[in-house]
Length: 317
Image 1 (tube, rainbow, N blue to C red):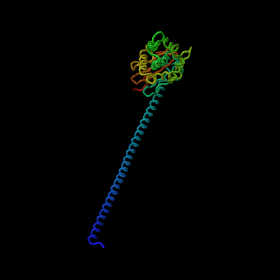
Image 2: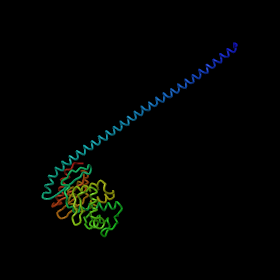
Image 3: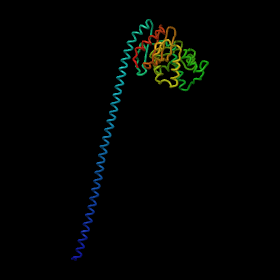
């Protein structure tokens, strides 16, 4: 049997073992508790992040929805404004047609006027009727020449008709010289090519045919002039060159006379036999417009009077 001393030592040993076991248990419990806290914290953090993400996502969706709503409202407002402008344009056209029928009594005529701010046509009368273009055909030749300069295949110093392309171009627009555009059509380009170029920009009723006078419509001339104004057909420098020359052309009896002091006109006229035509860009107090008036058996005075009637009917800017 163990002695009292041995028994006491054994009790101490057991107590030490119990203390160690308890400490281990406490340590394990602490670790488990700490791990639980960490897991809980992670879960709480994940839930918080998820909630934040949900809020952010909701905000983004809400923001995108607001932007969509604003874009839709803007598109709707623009559509309504365009519809109102088109309705106003139709009313103007109906109003002036009655007066123009009187001005051009006994003559054939066609008119197209384009509002360059909104693209509407305040006046469109027989705009698709084919007329002899007379020298307004030189606008299509000018486009062909300027396109060649823009592409680098020609320069203003290139030879044409015994002089330079630049000099020929100026004479063709300013004094309506015929030799230079004819040299272009025969020696550099061709009637078929210039016709194709006109069609490529939307002037699909315009035609250059050997042995015949060139033909066009008010709508086609409005198309090329609108493209020049908007800068979609030519480089900026070529656009400015053409408009400057048109402002310098010497025949001012038609559209420029009708606009008078109300604006500045860059135009190209045509006259051949009974055909008197005028097509130009009008920079006026009421805004910028394309005016095209084609006539047969009329007069410059009638064209000027028609211009004045149309301009008076346009809305104030």
